[in-house]
Amino acid sequence: MGEIINVPTELHRTLLHCMADTLIVVNPDGLMDEGERLSLARRYAERWHHRTPQDSHATECALLVHAPAVRPGATRDEYAAVLRLVAEGVTA
Image (cartoon, rainbow, N blue to C red):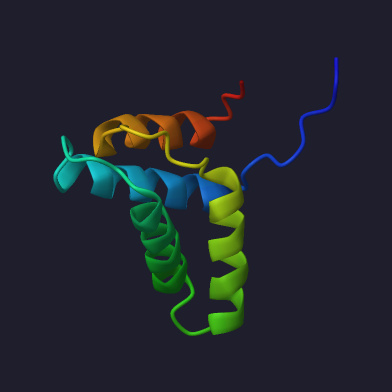
């Protein structure tokens, strides 16, 4: 078996769940898009590191590595489910 690489840290898992929570509460049946993915990663990284912008940027970049690209036609709640799977360590 190959070694699993790029596993989310505890912080990243927590923030991925927070991103998913937002998606299922705010317009869950709406279409998800790449802009929203980028916005959520930035928003949660900045909230976590509100006093250290350099750490915020690193966390944002890591979240974007873990949060896969949005599948065309995916709803916000479908993408939330994907984020939760990633946070739980499920890989394809």
